[in-house]
Image 1 (tube, rainbow, N blue to C red):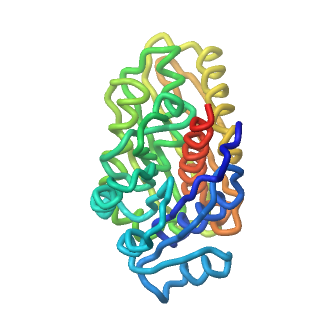
Image 2 (cartoon, rainbow, N blue to C red):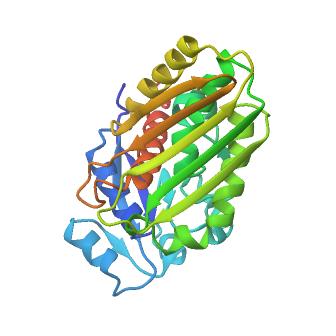
Image 3 (cartoon, rainbow, N blue to C red):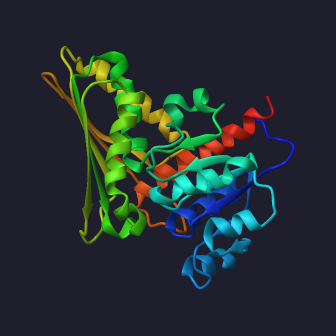
Length: 291
């Protein structure tokens, strides 16, 4: 990846696990710098941790970012779906690329390994959901080698890896995931489900994909699924196919994502996959500026 003449200045809205992990990833990027991380409450633990990381922080949410008077090339929104619409309006005049990690219904829905290059002209990336980022690469690959007549995506995340925002946004999560599957994979009927498990020890993030497709051939299906997984691992190394079977017209694929971060636990692959995809898209945007 060619490096731009300067690092793009990024701001992060949200100081939960997702926001802190985003800030860490941005700090390791060769093309981005975390210029500001914004929380809602001045006394929040997330802001204290961000300050301990040496980051510039601010409280009072989007208003603090707007009042900073600084220019940001990229803004990552790790708040929640209901707030994102207002954030989009307030940021529209700044010229910043907006990377939305909430399951809102706005922006260009993007999965880097599927439509990342085509989406680059957009100034507003919607990262869909953790389940969407995990399942859509496989569903898109299957749609290239067979004709699905039904698709199902069942994601299971540990309760310890899901914050208040995720729980508030479960309806939006399901709706946005289903819409993105139809848009980026194929137009067959689709059902998305999200399970939260309190199991102890916590399991890794898992997504079960089930597809009905006539005349599906096992060798072709398995080759397509594993090739799709390799493309995802280019930016999310913890992504893995744990099984892929074809029984008559039914295709079952089991996926797992594990995380490697000092701010999110190893089992929080749901956070890892969406953050990895978000930072990758911002880096691709930065690289495109030098072409």
